[in-house]
Amino acid sequence: MTAESLRDLAIAAARGGGAVLRRYYGAPGRVVTKPDGAGPVSEADLASEATIVAVLRWSRIPILAEESGGAGDESPRRWIVDPLDGTSNFIRHLPWFCVGIALAAGDDVELGVVYAPLTDELFVAERGLGATLNGVPVRVSPTDALHDACLFTACDAAVCGAPARIRRVAHVASRARELRSPNAALLDLAYVAAGRADGFWEQGLAPWDIAAGSLLVREAGGETSDFSGGPLRFARREIVATNGRIHDELVAALSAAPLGLCPRAGQQPPQVWQGGPDAGVKHGRSGRAGARRDHLQDGGARIADVPQRSGDPGTFRCPLPRPRRLVSAACRCHRRDPAAPVASPMARSSVLAWKRSSVMPTAGAPTSSR
Image 1: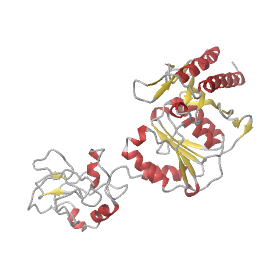
Image 2: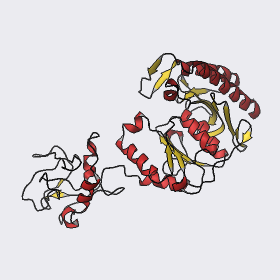
Image 3: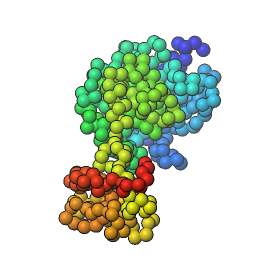
């Protein structure tokens, strides 16, 4: 089949799947959670996928679909199908969802189609031929600074259950003008391509969440990469997509986000040793004899287990009035416990106010990173 006929086939399949979703909208049928806990799947997902696959089979190209699986990485060329991106929105009667279809050889996408059935918006991109919305060419936004940017990302269960990812969201949001969380990756990417948003990032994504939208962004004049700024690879399960003008800034902000709990954001916490050169006991290690868990009075911040060795020359005490017990200089240590709240600004500033000499390794003691 020619490139034009493959494009028409993908458009027909996307519109067919979208028609199914319109019928189910407001009544998605039975909803179950996927066995791997990856999210919900409804009768609408399955019905849309069946319609799409039935159309794409005419091409005789292997198909990788979200619900039924199929062609793996070994296929020289394959369709990549998401029959309903934004299932959580769909089952809650929120209008932020779409159908996504891509044709790719490995990580190289040559055709991408994203269809939003409720607004009847059809985004199409062909490698080297640009991107269109309902047949009209689209381009990314002209925003040239992160502090003026409107960004999209996800704040789903995977993010809300991971304190490090929440801190990344907060860090980037503090550097942008707006942050929104529609929770439909393909539609987010299509909106970046159309200039409605300036950037998008997310991790934990499958190929069907990335493929079609990533081509839309590139063909509309934008840029895509992984979180380190390297080439986009489906196996990495992450994407940064922007209008290109703010790409380096956004990648840098993601890389600089404080993923640990150390008050010195983005830096390794100081290595604190109890006793002399032969003690060899580092703060933050659990299971030591006499270990004690304390809380700072201000903000109730939970602090790491600290070996109680009164009289050791390397020990020090909490600078707050109560409780007067040993604490760790590196609050990052307590990230072992996901339920532990982050220390309040007052508590963290008090930790940083300690004399440098009191938190540096004793002379001769080894240092290492965690």
